[in-house]
Image 1 (cartoon, rainbow, N blue to C red):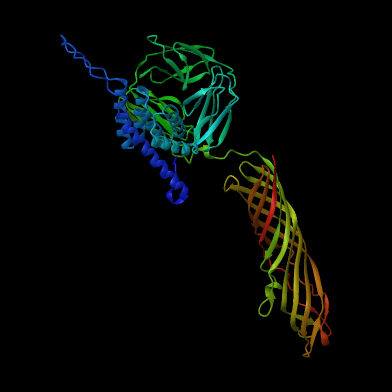
Image 2 (image 1 turned 90 degrees about the vertical axis):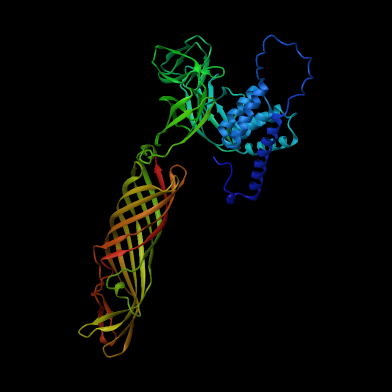
Length: 609
């Protein structure tokens, strides 16, 4: 993972810190390069010449320090070419031959460049602990700068609850036995934890570690219900370590209890001695013998898969999950990496003698894999209460629909409250019933209309109308939920049903001209008619989870109301007609055949699991 943000995104203090750390790393290697070539101690005084020998003396065997210098020179060449893995292998080999601060600092810098920050932190601490008295002041200051930065990139893991003596491995690297003397330090990012003890089922878990933060894992091991035995020996009887599924069991010959199934076994000895990994099938209640031949394994391979829980196979033998590192024969090998939900990858790797190769394999996501499908949710009963405003451009019909010219029509406004109850199945398909209330009104000022006197021509004039719909609704609905993200579900709902109630027209401020030309006014006249509408209501809502079962919702519905009753003004109601006597308003439909409204609203939704 990148150690630093892009330059544009970094605060100035982070940029300065980065420059200091880069300078520190360069300074360490520069000082170390000079130090390794310096003699360890003054040369001894010249001795007396030896008498001539009858035969030439055999060539002198290089000392451990001289061999370490050769390794260091190779490491420095790899370092300058930025081949961090090869440089690291040579620095570590130099350390084994001759423990110098120069090789230690070189290994620490390479580990940091490879992103293995926890190991780099340990190596820098070893540098300051073991070589503090020899380190030049500049190198000591540079190492301390590196330590300060690495501590921000390393998190802490605590493993609790494991059986005493259980082997703990992180990313294939043995980190100790339970109970651990203290917490483990890990590079921030994803890691694969494995806890194993003979006679128990292995515990495996992927964890995410943040820099300078603590993660706890409770690794309870369950005793095996059925077990088989595996007996491992080396053909020539040499005492090598027996490694089963990445865990060192004991020295060969070894016999122990394992879970039935396939296991990976290898032998590991001093230096290059060992055996390539092989697969063996252990059967319940039986003892499986396995004899391996140790040989020289002259090359090393480290496989770093992404994701970290990917399985790794070498030459057809599954060697485990996550990072794998081990010795192999020099030559060509087949590395296969696979993980659920990802496209498997196979890679040919050619290893030379004395070479350490790092194969970083990043798998591509397989979008067609069922692994990425969200698990089906159980059927659940849901209740949602929604309330909000209702807006309508016009009631339509022969009242609001004829408000033109000097007539002023306000926007229809109102409110609604609806209760939805039903079931949701699986990811989000649902069905249920609805019940609620809707009120909507519209005001018309100066609408032109007529009063019809008995036996006389119509009297033209204007009137103010207030149309009001008040109704109860009942119906059913179907729905579908689509998750926008882990916390924001999007709900689509389609409701159908009926609305029953009353449609009222209140007429005031009437001003009409009688047939003789005189003006007269009309006060309040109102009619109330039964109303029956069939409604279709599409709706979309977004939810904000508040806890596991409660959501706050907001959305918008578009009720489409189909007028079934078609109520109209009743001409049987008489009104004064001035000097023309009495008359009646025209027969006018109070609403159009289809009334469309918009209803934004908020609500609360509860799921009964």
